[in-house]
Image: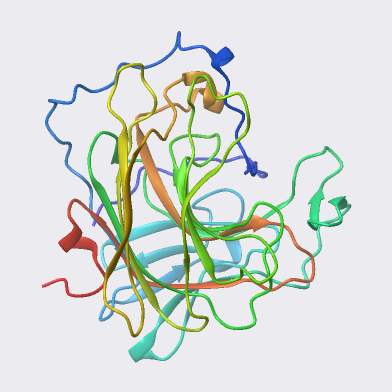
Length: 326
């Protein structure tokens, strides 16, 4: 199990917009050099969380805060995941009986931000006095050591219980890919809108010169049955845009409680950031981290929850899939 690098301080309100403005005017003067296609694959660190038979411990739940790693951290065997909470997000919890435990992420419907100002009544989005969009989060994170230009496999079981409110605003991410202090460049989110509370979307983001309008690409949408465990395996090969460089690749497999494994899609796409100015505080890097749990726009009075188990990250499909790993 890989031990993450020392705690990184994050801004208290990390802005996750529904879209990212992409423009050729950003320029490519500060673009890093892409790795040649012939370069040897980089070793992929292994992570795992919520595995049956291990001892799970949430450390310092009361200290879970917008400072990642300050509390709500997961200790499991020799492994460690940093916790982060914001707004209505409660510290990660271990729930269920011993034979069917889960890592649970939930929001407190009674939480209220002081001085919250409604931005869009129809979408139920809120801002603070400085005009920043208010967010809720409860998450666990890997270190900043997952490589670009290499197949990184992510497998997990997820359950969205009955009684979860509909998502408004930009949607609720249950898994995110982060390259730097900016915006996520991919992940999995609950589809926003009434009646969509159990549809998962697989998203990519990044910079593409020539794109003049905001975008947030949902490549596929998969309905899941409320209250049942669903298994996913995702292959990420991150390639930000470089003129003449090959695209990256994203592929997703799904298995339901009563259905066999199905490949949802596989696509070549650019995603991630190649320009240093995209990353605040010179936090640019050609590596990324995975965060899972719940991250969403603030919705006062609403209840949200996601349950995870069998989370694995590694260098092959066999190493990470939550089922049939033999």
